[in-house]
Length: 370
Image (cartoon, rainbow, N blue to C red):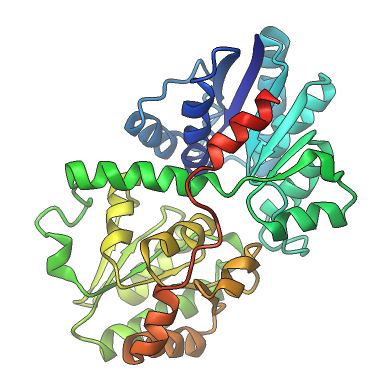
């Protein structure tokens, strides 16, 4: 019996690992143990509840105003105790959070093998995104098996000296999760928090906006909000729906610049299924999120990425997303182009998603069996 520990702490990690958990639980020769650090408490719990996944161990490490250093120290200390007691044969982590980096380091100290899901993403810029770029680079130095979502991410690892024998292209598990979620959305038609009195079709067409990246705090978010304000004035027949991240660095400029716009809906952060519903019914998506870049193309939605760099260049090559940065004029011009130019819109909407076919979790299960 192979003991597999799956450790995660945030909603994006949960979304991308739950399909893996469900797949591994099918294998009778695996003992699957789920541990959460709860780096993000409430948003994590919402996803676990949707898919009926109950952690075996909950470290509950979230604290108000916690620094990255403090969080890292708490993760290392708590995971050290967990590994000492459970003694897994291999631990699976996903992506690039502080949980991923801390867990991988402690696994190394315990000489436990590490499997890295969504391995090999790179911007090759130390502070962009911060702290995610260094989290994933450090994890790659420790990991024993790398589940790369695309050929580009695999090549990044090979270029860094990782052996090809332990580097495997699986596709991205976020597409597996998306397909599970869209079925649930179609079954239950979840209500969007703040829009309970509306059917989303009544608000169409609309642009969906999300933003949370640290590197966009300050002038970046001011520029983003000014662009949305200008677009809302120009396109009165469009609505602009913005679930606003709780960080004051996001909340403050958004409320100051956009709160008086009649066709701008500022919402609280959404749980997973309502957000999938928002994506499914949107016309265009403006975001700085990595997961949305991967998910939205499978729904036929053009994505404009409000970042200066992206670790997902295959989406740009495929034509499913366009990198627009945080320049007000560039954001405005690109949205105008998609609204006014049907050919340009259809070109992006019909491009093939490079992130997979929804079968990544099965490939990971097979590799772990082998």
